[in-house]
Image (tube, rainbow, N blue to C red):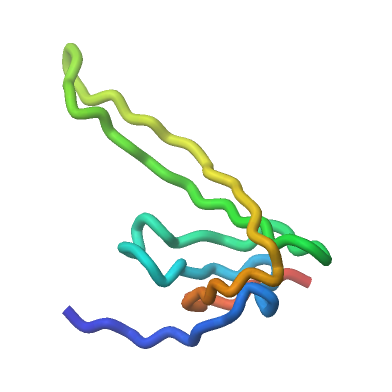
Amino acid sequence: MTHMTLPEVPTSELCVGDTVLLQSSEPYYTCQTVKRVTDREVWFFRPYVHTSSFTTTDGVICYVGIEEYAVDRRSPFTYALVRRGDVA
């Protein structure tokens, strides 16, 4: 499997609409989009789908949702920039 090298961006340089990966986990768990940027915080959201470990009748119960959270703009975290947002 070939891995791309993505540019790293500090929290303070993220913009609304940016799609990023947190550098610590598998991409399908960490891909997120910047929802809002204020003087103090950067807000992210990411959709998720989980399936339970049991079946009922003819299928599997799925849980679908959106996780939202904020990080301080002065946070030392860096993110891999997948795509720069195109929000005017």
